[in-house]
Image 1 (cartoon, helix red, strand yellow):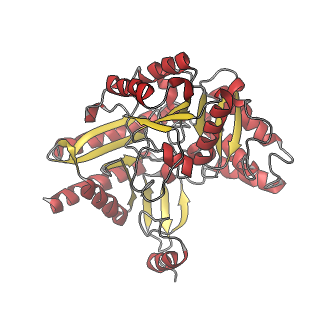
Image 2: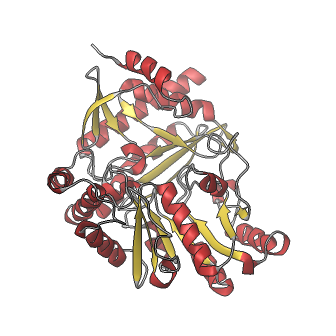
Image 3: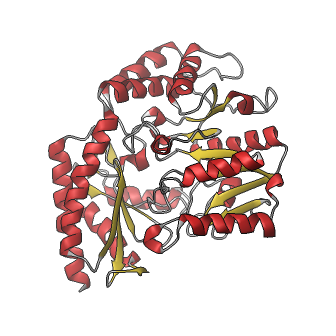
Length: 429
């Protein structure tokens, strides 16, 4: 019989070690918020494929849409002989994003979406410079690594990166970085490194993903909008991890009442199928010439069909409200853990169902506990709970359940998390 250990050995022989795995758990099937490995063991999924299956594993409506599309055709290439399902999805996205008079373009991955957003901004402005934020994550391609503000494991050993990319601090109150600090450094950047008139775009996540689930403070995005307007800079909101009901809004940018120029979308867009998009103001989106955007698999008909079903499920099952409810339930239990372990649980935060606990030593924000974080993730997997970590310092546990998770499964997962936290803290003491 095939087992996890045997498959892990084969994987190590066949797949480059750089494409590592969180745990040697080889999935044989999945349903909503539960997974089963090849040995028959069940797991509760608090990762959702990194915020991809917001509608759960194998949602019936997503599966039905895929079967129907597959029965018709699987690929012709959108740039060769297009199809209605891509047009329908673009129309849906254009009316749902917080951007007036929008247009869309499709690719396959989040990194491609970011790369194309930068291409579009440069074509529109005729400028080279791009400003990103420390702790931000925008992908693993060369340009996207340059934009990403986290070295290990994403940038280490892969340079040099493209020129004309600059970083400023992301405001994080827990670490003593105020919005005023960030804006002051941005102003200094304009004076010392690149003049504002040479900056094509500024890219920011409304809630940082890999960086640690830090949300943009209220008012900060509006201040960036004002600076971009003043200098003719394209404002890009990277909603790859935050989009599609994850934060309690369809898009996290909606919490800020700001209209971005461009948005990058992926992950939860197509319920597990590789599809990504750039959506933005029509005048900006139309700056590249025909043929300047696209890709062989961009706008896959299967992905587009799945995405239309995902949007239907979000509406019909009110997943934005469910994300808020999940956040409240999980935070209530995490607050119990924080009260029990004040020296280890330094900070809790959430935006809807995008939830994090930051682990430290001696209650000190400046003493990250990456070892405890790793131990917690590893032990949780052994107990049947999939957890993910993140953070520039590797000390943040992030919780990303499917938004369709059943209440009893959520409660069971939280009970495992609580048990594992107690065991790991006792062992470390």
